[in-house]
Image 1 (cartoon, rainbow, N blue to C red):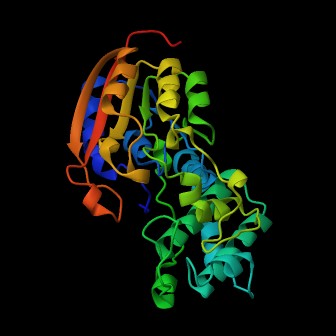
Image 2 (tube, one colour):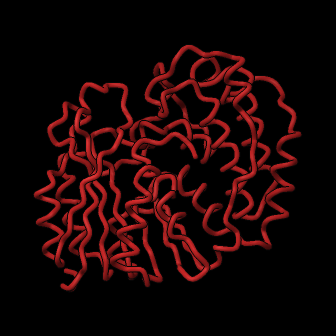
Image 3 (spheres, helix red, strand yellow):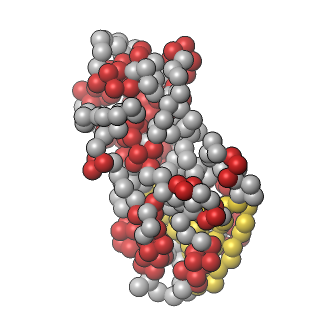
Length: 333
């Protein structure tokens, strides 16, 4: 578990119910906007092939470890993370200079820098490196003095930040893996290329770009150390991943994905905040989504009361999550 805007942990029971009722024999499941990967994890079994994709490098690296590591990798992963726990922190570094006293205590920021440089210097196998970076990312998320994303920070409590920065072993479901695939690509392009039984679609809902909300974790994952600016030390806009689903072109992007995907079952998550305010306004109304899906087959809409991730709670009375299922009967465009 980690803090992530739009994470579907509370929706998993309903997703499992719909999949069991509509497509229990689905063998290849595609989670095209995977985020934390909780939906793919829910459906991950040795008999299934899970394909997960996310355009954020920080998510994709975690997903690579979570869905592709197999039992033969376990000892090496445990040894590397054990070695990281003993890694010594030297003086100031890129991370402490940019994030110390902002998102983390000075000591935690220095440690993050030391750990990331050590991981790169050790020339690890890709799957082992992914697991090692995932451990650092989870520790950084737990220690960050934020409300769950990195568009702002709270006053740094050094003791709390340092106490919460703990390198843990990712609880990888090794024996369920082996056939899975992980991508870090544009979801629409991938959906048009890859065939499957079930496609789960959980796109961003509003104008808040995830490349900006999670810029710190992206920076840690990539460790390319670009120049940063501003109070929250963001990279230049051209270095932040950008999603059409967070713009006025959201409906066009969704329509393109639904029309071109090559699957037999579609399951789409969205919410009812089309009457929200500003950046919290969901960009695609329910009727538009239903019409798009009806172009591929019969549609069933489930409405689920759902707590939302925001500090502006006054906007969220009656908040619901939509779960739309479509049995695909018409060919892709």
